[in-house]
Image (cartoon, rainbow, N blue to C red):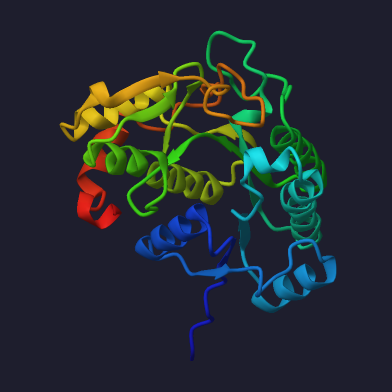
Length: 289
């Protein structure tokens, strides 16, 4: 008698930070998975999506693909809508037809920053830019189309495996003795990618659905976050210079306050804990050059 092969978790977004992280940690957890790229599945093509799902027979679909260039989206609303709304809703419709759990990712940028304390899941989106509007539209459509959908709002990734995230940028810049400009007028909740991935997988396995906020506990500006990283590595925090979104030439308007918290449950470690784990796991400085 032969064992029946385990049905895989289908993960889209093979070239992105999240897709790679989910595949890495699914492998560590012994979860059978398939990581797909745009060449494997065209997420806006309903027939292609249906064909791939029928062939792979996944037990759930986790969509990490999407349009991530917030400033470019202001002049490319069609591309942003295609990557963040059409693709997400095509998957939602296809997974619903097969009664499959589905995970989609959203952003703190669905909020306008008018609050002075962290946003929770029941707060009403009011995006300021094209990227945020597309993410907000995607949330609504995904939840309407698939009643087993889990929508994860998150924020400001950093982690040990992606050379180009903000934390590694700080280390490269300050390690070279250069001045680092960072926004002091935007309050965020930095999110350590391994914590995000493990918590999302736990929620998916537990059958959770609806909107969840997953970010490390804590709120800080980009500039102060840079100083935290500098202090972790004994780099020159004095080289971090406060700037603003306008001074840095960012095109898309950003909320001044978009820290996230959860009213459904505090599942993520603190930002201080995340920084400790990042310091232990991140590559040496010479590997970042």
